[in-house]
Image 1 (cartoon, helix red, strand yellow):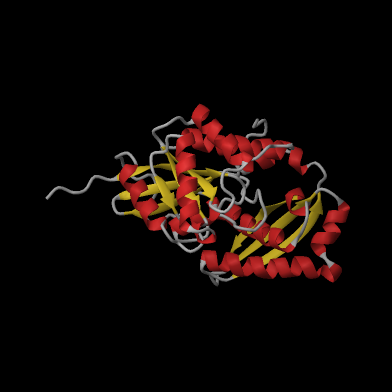
Image 2 (spheres, helix red, strand yellow):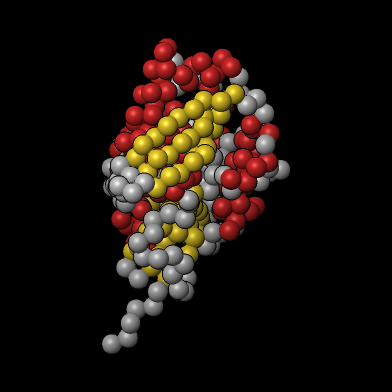
Length: 304
Protein backbone atom coordinates (compact mmCIF):
# COMPACT_ATOMS: atom_id res chain seq x y z
CA UNK A 1 0.00 0.00 0.00
CA UNK A 2 1.51 3.30 -1.08
CA UNK A 3 1.73 6.13 1.39
CA UNK A 4 -0.44 9.15 0.60
CA UNK A 5 1.53 12.00 -0.93
CA UNK A 6 1.81 15.10 1.21
CA UNK A 7 0.46 18.43 0.04
CA UNK A 8 1.37 21.92 1.14
CA UNK A 9 0.69 25.45 0.02
CA UNK A 10 -0.42 28.96 0.84
CA UNK A 11 -4.04 30.09 1.00
CA UNK A 12 -4.68 33.84 1.11
CA UNK A 13 -7.89 35.05 2.75
CA UNK A 14 -8.95 38.37 1.27
CA UNK A 15 -12.00 40.59 1.51
CA UNK A 16 -13.31 43.85 2.85
CA UNK A 17 -12.59 44.89 6.45
CA UNK A 18 -14.72 42.87 8.88
CA UNK A 19 -15.55 40.20 6.29
CA UNK A 20 -14.52 37.54 8.82
CA UNK A 21 -11.04 36.65 7.62
CA UNK A 22 -9.43 36.53 11.07
CA UNK A 23 -12.36 34.56 12.52
CA UNK A 24 -12.07 32.04 9.68
CA UNK A 25 -8.29 31.76 10.13
CA UNK A 26 -8.66 31.05 13.85
CA UNK A 27 -11.42 28.51 13.12
CA UNK A 28 -9.28 26.72 10.52
CA UNK A 29 -6.21 26.60 12.75
CA UNK A 30 -8.14 25.71 15.91
CA UNK A 31 -6.45 28.42 17.97
CA UNK A 32 -6.35 32.18 18.17
CA UNK A 33 -3.51 33.45 16.01
CA UNK A 34 -5.19 36.56 14.60
CA UNK A 35 -6.99 39.21 16.63
CA UNK A 36 -10.70 39.73 16.11
CA UNK A 37 -12.77 42.80 16.98
CA UNK A 38 -15.96 44.41 15.73
CA UNK A 39 -13.91 47.30 14.37
CA UNK A 40 -12.73 47.42 10.79
CA UNK A 41 -9.06 47.26 9.76
CA UNK A 42 -8.09 45.25 12.84
CA UNK A 43 -5.49 43.10 11.07
CA UNK A 44 -2.39 45.09 10.07
CA UNK A 45 -0.09 42.42 8.73
CA UNK A 46 -0.06 39.18 6.81
CA UNK A 47 -0.53 36.57 9.52
CA UNK A 48 0.24 32.97 8.69
CA UNK A 49 -1.69 30.26 10.50
CA UNK A 50 -0.90 26.59 9.90
CA UNK A 51 -3.55 23.86 9.74
CA UNK A 52 -3.30 20.14 9.09
CA UNK A 53 -5.97 18.32 7.09
CA UNK A 54 -5.11 14.69 6.38
CA UNK A 55 -1.82 14.60 4.50
CA UNK A 56 -2.01 18.30 3.67
CA UNK A 57 -0.53 21.26 5.49
CA UNK A 58 -2.47 24.43 4.75
CA UNK A 59 -0.66 27.70 5.40
CA UNK A 60 -3.35 30.37 5.72
CA UNK A 61 -2.44 34.00 5.16
CA UNK A 62 -4.86 36.36 6.92
CA UNK A 63 -4.43 39.65 5.11
CA UNK A 64 -5.47 43.17 6.10
CA UNK A 65 -8.89 44.11 4.75
CA UNK A 66 -8.94 45.76 1.34
CA UNK A 67 -10.22 49.32 1.44
CA UNK A 68 -9.43 52.76 0.05
CA UNK A 69 -6.17 53.82 1.75
CA UNK A 70 -5.78 57.28 3.24
CA UNK A 71 -2.62 57.17 5.35
CA UNK A 72 0.79 55.57 4.94
CA UNK A 73 -0.17 52.72 7.27
CA UNK A 74 -3.35 52.18 5.22
CA UNK A 75 -1.33 51.98 1.99
CA UNK A 76 1.08 49.49 3.52
CA UNK A 77 -1.81 47.32 4.73
CA UNK A 78 -3.53 47.28 1.34
CA UNK A 79 -0.21 46.51 -0.34
CA UNK A 80 0.31 43.59 2.05
CA UNK A 81 -3.17 42.25 1.27
CA UNK A 82 -2.63 42.23 -2.48
CA UNK A 83 0.88 40.86 -1.99
CA UNK A 84 -0.56 37.96 0.00
CA UNK A 85 -3.01 37.22 -2.81
CA UNK A 86 -0.31 37.37 -5.48
CA UNK A 87 1.98 34.97 -3.60
CA UNK A 88 -0.66 32.38 -2.69
CA UNK A 89 -1.42 29.04 -4.35
CA UNK A 90 -5.14 29.59 -3.71
CA UNK A 91 -7.02 32.78 -2.92
CA UNK A 92 -10.30 32.72 -0.98
CA UNK A 93 -12.48 35.81 -1.32
CA UNK A 94 -14.79 36.32 1.66
CA UNK A 95 -18.02 38.21 1.03
CA UNK A 96 -20.49 39.00 3.79
CA UNK A 97 -23.85 37.42 2.95
CA UNK A 98 -25.96 40.19 4.46
CA UNK A 99 -24.04 43.02 2.78
CA UNK A 100 -23.83 41.44 -0.66
CA UNK A 101 -21.96 43.04 -3.53
CA UNK A 102 -20.82 46.35 -2.13
CA UNK A 103 -18.69 48.85 -4.07
CA UNK A 104 -15.73 47.49 -2.10
CA UNK A 105 -16.44 43.93 -3.23
CA UNK A 106 -16.73 45.13 -6.82
CA UNK A 107 -13.29 46.78 -6.55
CA UNK A 108 -11.76 43.61 -5.11
CA UNK A 109 -13.21 41.47 -7.91
CA UNK A 110 -11.76 43.91 -10.45
CA UNK A 111 -8.43 43.65 -8.66
CA UNK A 112 -8.58 39.85 -8.69
CA UNK A 113 -9.14 39.83 -12.43
CA UNK A 114 -6.03 41.96 -12.83
CA UNK A 115 -3.74 40.48 -10.15
CA UNK A 116 -4.80 36.87 -9.54
CA UNK A 117 -6.68 35.74 -12.63
CA UNK A 118 -9.01 32.75 -12.90
CA UNK A 119 -8.02 29.25 -11.89
CA UNK A 120 -6.95 29.81 -8.29
CA UNK A 121 -9.66 31.89 -6.61
CA UNK A 122 -12.50 30.41 -4.55
CA UNK A 123 -15.50 32.27 -3.16
CA UNK A 124 -16.66 31.94 0.45
CA UNK A 125 -19.93 33.66 1.26
CA UNK A 126 -19.63 34.22 5.00
CA UNK A 127 -22.15 34.93 7.78
CA UNK A 128 -24.81 32.82 6.07
CA UNK A 129 -26.77 32.67 9.34
CA UNK A 130 -27.79 36.29 8.74
CA UNK A 131 -29.80 35.76 5.53
CA UNK A 132 -32.33 33.31 4.07
CA UNK A 133 -31.24 30.58 1.58
CA UNK A 134 -32.93 32.07 -1.53
CA UNK A 135 -30.95 35.27 -1.12
CA UNK A 136 -27.72 33.27 -0.71
CA UNK A 137 -28.29 31.43 -3.98
CA UNK A 138 -28.98 34.67 -5.80
CA UNK A 139 -25.85 36.30 -4.39
CA UNK A 140 -23.71 33.29 -5.33
CA UNK A 141 -25.05 33.34 -8.89
CA UNK A 142 -24.42 37.07 -9.26
CA UNK A 143 -20.88 36.85 -7.92
CA UNK A 144 -20.02 33.91 -10.18
CA UNK A 145 -21.35 35.85 -13.14
CA UNK A 146 -18.78 38.55 -12.39
CA UNK A 147 -15.76 36.29 -11.84
CA UNK A 148 -14.84 32.70 -12.74
CA UNK A 149 -14.45 31.26 -9.23
CA UNK A 150 -13.07 27.74 -8.86
CA UNK A 151 -15.64 26.84 -6.21
CA UNK A 152 -18.25 28.56 -4.08
CA UNK A 153 -18.74 27.80 -0.39
CA UNK A 154 -21.46 28.93 2.00
CA UNK A 155 -19.96 29.30 5.46
CA UNK A 156 -20.24 30.86 8.88
CA UNK A 157 -16.76 31.39 10.27
CA UNK A 158 -18.30 32.25 13.65
CA UNK A 159 -20.33 29.02 14.05
CA UNK A 160 -18.21 26.73 11.88
CA UNK A 161 -20.99 25.88 9.41
CA UNK A 162 -19.50 24.88 6.05
CA UNK A 163 -15.92 25.48 7.19
CA UNK A 164 -14.97 21.79 7.18
CA UNK A 165 -16.02 21.46 3.52
CA UNK A 166 -13.86 24.45 2.57
CA UNK A 167 -10.91 23.10 4.52
CA UNK A 168 -11.17 19.65 2.89
CA UNK A 169 -11.36 21.16 -0.57
CA UNK A 170 -8.31 23.31 0.07
CA UNK A 171 -6.37 20.27 1.30
CA UNK A 172 -7.25 18.33 -1.86
CA UNK A 173 -6.48 21.26 -4.19
CA UNK A 174 -3.08 22.39 -2.88
CA UNK A 175 -0.05 21.14 -4.82
CA UNK A 176 1.87 18.07 -3.76
CA UNK A 177 5.00 18.82 -1.77
CA UNK A 178 6.70 18.53 1.63
CA UNK A 179 5.34 20.33 4.67
CA UNK A 180 6.97 23.66 5.47
CA UNK A 181 6.39 23.70 9.24
CA UNK A 182 6.60 21.20 12.13
CA UNK A 183 3.31 19.38 12.77
CA UNK A 184 2.71 21.14 16.09
CA UNK A 185 3.32 24.70 14.82
CA UNK A 186 0.16 26.78 14.34
CA UNK A 187 1.66 30.13 13.32
CA UNK A 188 4.89 31.56 11.97
CA UNK A 189 4.72 34.79 13.96
CA UNK A 190 7.14 35.25 16.88
CA UNK A 191 5.34 34.85 20.21
CA UNK A 192 6.47 38.36 21.19
CA UNK A 193 4.50 39.75 18.25
CA UNK A 194 1.45 37.58 18.94
CA UNK A 195 1.48 38.80 22.56
CA UNK A 196 1.60 42.42 21.40
CA UNK A 197 -1.27 41.81 18.99
CA UNK A 198 -3.40 40.26 21.74
CA UNK A 199 -2.89 43.37 23.86
CA UNK A 200 -3.77 45.58 20.90
CA UNK A 201 -6.98 43.61 20.47
CA UNK A 202 -8.02 44.40 24.05
CA UNK A 203 -7.27 48.07 23.46
CA UNK A 204 -9.39 48.11 20.32
CA UNK A 205 -12.28 46.48 22.13
CA UNK A 206 -12.03 48.94 25.01
CA UNK A 207 -11.48 52.19 23.14
CA UNK A 208 -13.74 54.02 20.73
CA UNK A 209 -13.71 56.18 17.61
CA UNK A 210 -10.38 56.76 15.84
CA UNK A 211 -8.02 56.23 18.76
CA UNK A 212 -7.50 52.46 18.20
CA UNK A 213 -5.99 53.26 14.80
CA UNK A 214 -3.63 55.83 16.29
CA UNK A 215 -1.81 53.38 18.56
CA UNK A 216 0.42 50.36 18.34
CA UNK A 217 1.84 47.86 20.85
CA UNK A 218 5.36 46.49 21.05
CA UNK A 219 6.81 43.81 23.30
CA UNK A 220 9.91 45.46 24.71
CA UNK A 221 11.08 42.78 27.14
CA UNK A 222 10.49 39.02 27.51
CA UNK A 223 11.93 37.31 30.58
CA UNK A 224 11.63 33.56 31.14
CA UNK A 225 11.41 32.78 34.86
CA UNK A 226 12.59 29.71 36.73
CA UNK A 227 9.09 28.85 37.92
CA UNK A 228 7.94 28.45 34.31
CA UNK A 229 6.17 31.80 34.12
CA UNK A 230 7.15 34.66 31.84
CA UNK A 231 7.43 38.40 32.48
CA UNK A 232 6.36 40.52 29.51
CA UNK A 233 6.90 44.28 29.31
CA UNK A 234 4.99 46.02 26.54
CA UNK A 235 4.83 49.61 25.34
CA UNK A 236 1.65 51.17 23.97
CA UNK A 237 2.66 53.95 21.57
CA UNK A 238 0.15 56.76 20.95
CA UNK A 239 0.41 59.86 18.79
CA UNK A 240 -0.69 62.54 21.26
CA UNK A 241 -0.64 63.28 24.98
CA UNK A 242 -4.45 63.41 24.96
CA UNK A 243 -4.49 59.85 23.61
CA UNK A 244 -2.21 58.75 26.42
CA UNK A 245 -4.68 60.10 28.98
CA UNK A 246 -7.51 58.18 27.31
CA UNK A 247 -5.57 54.91 27.24
CA UNK A 248 -4.60 55.31 30.89
CA UNK A 249 -8.13 56.22 31.98
CA UNK A 250 -9.14 57.72 35.32
CA UNK A 251 -6.51 56.69 37.89
CA UNK A 252 -5.15 54.17 35.37
CA UNK A 253 -8.40 52.16 35.30
CA UNK A 254 -8.51 51.66 31.53
CA UNK A 255 -4.97 50.42 31.02
CA UNK A 256 -5.33 48.22 34.11
CA UNK A 257 -8.45 46.56 32.69
CA UNK A 258 -6.73 46.11 29.33
CA UNK A 259 -3.71 44.57 31.06
CA UNK A 260 -5.85 42.10 33.00
CA UNK A 261 -7.72 40.98 29.89
CA UNK A 262 -4.55 40.75 27.80
CA UNK A 263 -2.68 38.83 30.49
CA UNK A 264 -5.43 36.21 30.64
CA UNK A 265 -5.47 35.84 26.85
CA UNK A 266 -1.68 35.63 26.52
CA UNK A 267 -1.48 33.16 29.39
CA UNK A 268 -4.09 30.94 27.71
CA UNK A 269 -2.19 31.13 24.42
CA UNK A 270 1.18 30.30 26.01
CA UNK A 271 -0.40 27.83 28.46
CA UNK A 272 1.57 29.18 31.40
CA UNK A 273 1.44 32.03 33.92
CA UNK A 274 2.16 35.50 32.58
CA UNK A 275 3.20 38.69 34.38
CA UNK A 276 2.28 41.53 32.05
CA UNK A 277 3.40 45.14 32.50
CA UNK A 278 2.13 47.92 30.24
CA UNK A 279 3.53 51.41 29.71
CA UNK A 280 1.96 54.12 27.56
CA UNK A 281 4.35 56.40 25.66
CA UNK A 282 3.71 59.35 23.35
CA UNK A 283 5.49 59.09 19.99
CA UNK A 284 3.86 61.46 17.49
CA UNK A 285 5.56 60.02 14.42
CA UNK A 286 5.32 56.29 15.13
CA UNK A 287 3.31 55.81 11.92
CA UNK A 288 6.25 57.26 9.97
CA UNK A 289 8.89 54.94 11.46
CA UNK A 290 10.15 52.41 8.86
CA UNK A 291 11.35 50.02 11.58
CA UNK A 292 7.82 49.57 12.93
CA UNK A 293 6.58 48.66 9.47
CA UNK A 294 9.35 46.13 9.07
CA UNK A 295 8.47 44.53 12.41
CA UNK A 296 4.90 44.08 11.15
CA UNK A 297 6.04 42.62 7.84
CA UNK A 298 4.76 45.69 5.99
CA UNK A 299 6.40 47.68 3.21
CA UNK A 300 6.99 51.23 4.43
CA UNK A 301 6.59 52.44 0.84
CA UNK A 302 3.59 50.19 0.13
CA UNK A 303 1.10 51.53 -2.34
CA UNK A 304 -2.54 50.50 -2.67
